[in-house]
Image (cartoon, rainbow, N blue to C red; front, side, top):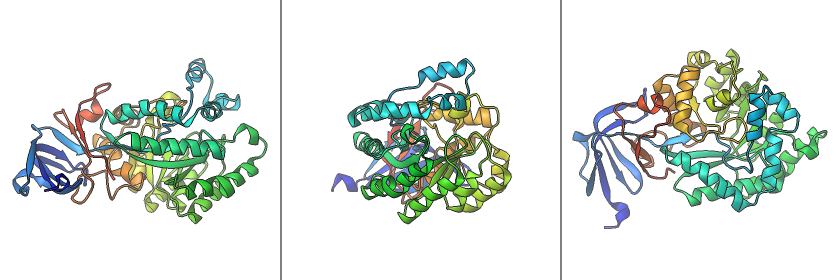
Length: 400
């Protein structure tokens, strides 16, 4: 028999299937896998016969975690800006003085593809070591065709270097590059007429993002980018309502966006629009913490309207130099008052939806990819409660 056809029973386990409602807990549970798929999820007493078995020794099994908003590929760092913020400078002040995103653009333009891959692997490995098997990686530190291409190619290479599912997102509408400082319309033209069509044709883009903010792009400019994405058959998402309420979340929802992310200044109408459209609310506590913000996302409004909530690291060099999704879960609970269930679903089922991966990953269900994590914990809450502690025993599978 071909090893790929071997049927394996993962027995003596406790399952958090995340298949809903809630965490879908099963005591004395078991999984059966074959050819990289889950063919049984349920009580061990009901499991079918298998060719071999693995004793999980009472460990908890969850779906592998998914980090659905990262900027893992970039050149340089922004430790100096960290010092400036400690001295009282705001994010907007640093950006207007030539720091922020534009400073990373210069470092990224100057790095080779190999250098970008090498530096990103260190950050990716930190995530994988905590049970992450799916990750989104955005471009947006190139802001010209050659560098955006280089970033996306580097992101694709990471999926070949490691056993991980990578979804790439084109974020050309991240900031104005220095050479277009006084030519906003021309840069949006470049994105829509040249950059995005070329990168999509090369198969480098899984989704399209933008930054809708007073220091970035307007609703009208983002709408042009989204219209281009729609013509190319690409899903969209948006950095929205991070520093002010620009109505970006409602705009994203009107395009059926996979997600709208940050959302500190989201209003009731935006929350309702997202819930109705099925647009996932991706909360990013690492940026909230790093920027020392005081206005938290309106979690009560998101709950009221039934919006799906995900949690991600927003790993980036300036505003969230975070490479621990488990720490992000603790931050989301502590800073935003999410429940344990909301945090864990936010890094599994809802994170998968935010990347368009829900048919393959994010929950333990028959027919999905056999991608799961075994944990040395006594209860699932430990994955949210502990800080600086990694209880991962084993990560199985590579997702879609």
